[in-house]
Image 1: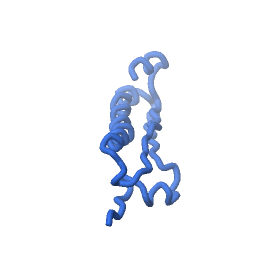
Image 2: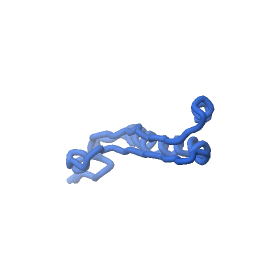
Image 3: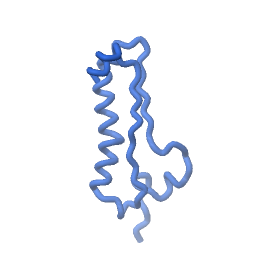
Image 4: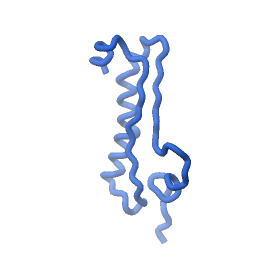
Length: 90
């Protein structure tokens, strides 16, 4: 972030737009896949924000925009998929 701020004269906006989602059920989702979703969706967002905040504090109008899947409220994104809902295992 420091190199970008130096090259462009500062940072005014951070857009956290990376995301990872696995459309698998609870029993079919491995720990590795869950860790990847956590790392991309939460950890990377936190670390990018943390790195930008010192530069954003010097901006006249700083913003952080964080996008997250799904992009709409269609039931296909929420109903049968982890980590949204644990499926009936009976």
